[in-house]
Image (cartoon, rainbow, N blue to C red; front, side, top):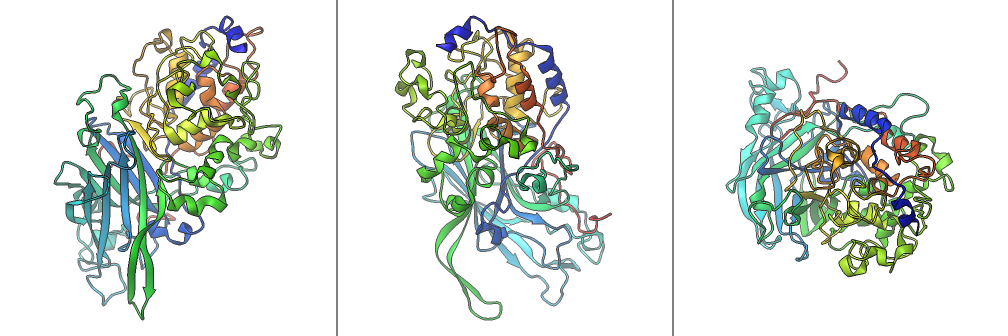
Length: 581
């Protein structure tokens, strides 16, 4: 078997070229959102449209987890006279699963909003201290999986839209500052959480024009452009004690920084009453059961993994009742076709740096419809690994013709366990099926599309010189190549282990990370190197193919507004009178 052949030939992955790449990456920070107008039906219902979801350990208060759920995409800051706000007949919910042994959510936070025209006699949104619309909310919490809810905030305040200086600062308006309105809306709940709901700068930055022009990103015919620069969205931000989110029976202090009892799954949704009846004039009636119309877990799933014919169905489902027919889109992702020269790689020149392993270690083909590692099924070499049927059944190696079941599938749909082979190649001595250096454990196989976060992993300070928007990919690169991290296979904190796809920080560049992952970089990190690695001619697996993937960029790497160092961390919304200046 080729794995054994290469075990003796491989040496530690420490070479100057990758160190140069890492030094380059360390200087970058960026952010991304993921689900704007991603399905036909929800594109016509922006008030209920999930755009983003983040879950991370709070940098200035590591005993808390911050969850940020964004809605209402593409808001023009000057978009009056009817400025954007949350919908009255929408249930906005954040769901948490903390126990894989119990189907469904354990904790649900629900927000419902009320609106009042304080001065119906004017067409202005703000005048003489009055708001149209004045929006407030009730936040309720369920700790029994949604069976019952307790109100933990009532009459919560949503700041008005940031219209302009006369509306906010002048005596003819609200006679205050927007920062004061924004900060005073941060509220403590009766059960120990902090909450903010309101308009913010949309943290989504990506060249949508290029991406959706048949994958022209980075653009081959001109400079990239941030499609949502100076656009706003609305956010529901929660800061929740880790103790509240822990599953029943978990230790109050983690046993180590990858403690499996500290893994949670997070997803967000929006629901509407089933029936809307137009009566006459401004009279509208809502009735019937609540129907989920939007959801988000992992970024870019519905937008760039699920095909257009299944997108509306995907939004109606939960992570616990997904259609198994959709799983094929993870095993054989469409994007991978454009990273394979035997398929359609030549038709998408922007992805030329992203090429999947088709002959890794001289044996393993991960191109669409190939077998990946399935040829090892039943081989004694798999004994005790995550790919052994006796460990997790057929979850990660279900059948032939599903090559990405071993990397994209767990990253998107189950989380990744700290079990062989899901450890860094450091310490494996060339055998990807040997024990290596642990760097991730967010395995929660209960349910499907969720952000999965291990709350035991320490925070990488945002001012740490090793902090990177590449999240776990950067953690892997450091663990493979940078001393002292690459000198031992022992479990230790590597900077950015708290980054995407272990949860998602605001700074994490998920578009680039996910495109690199489709391009096979996770396989390389665990020792399934790129096709151009030949130990007979070079001892280093840090080949040109690997460097090409690591240095790939979409061309948009900065948000249009900086994040802040305290909750809710997002930037305040753009002002309508600032745009175009």
